[in-house]
Length: 149
View: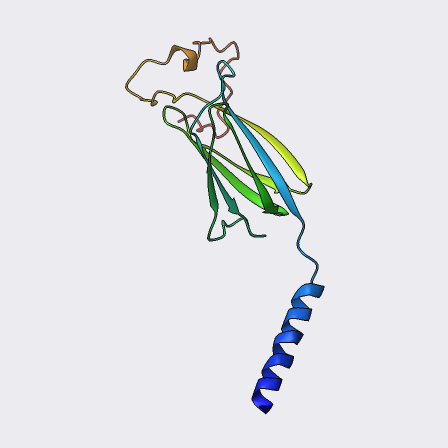
């Protein structure tokens, strides 16, 4: 009988402590995922969110959302602080960036790029060639000339 009464008192104390705690502020995140080249929505893109600690390290856990046919998705209940957002979609480069969640509602528009071709040193890259310039300056004198013999 005594243990039952102690158990009830402990449970009531725990419930009161939990009720008095102020809940952490949370935000609503709205995402719009579009193609960079024409601005059309990207459907079925994966939007992955991970909390980030003060050292910039990704915490365990996370959440994955999928975009609808209009390229939109949202989530209510993101805690304030750093959030790493990655977007994956077939036929596009992976997007990744850290955001500071610091307001009750955030609207993010993310523009996905098409994949770029790989860079090869064996191919000609005319945009990177330097023009051959003639040096108009005379050759500087030798700083350590050898004495004549």
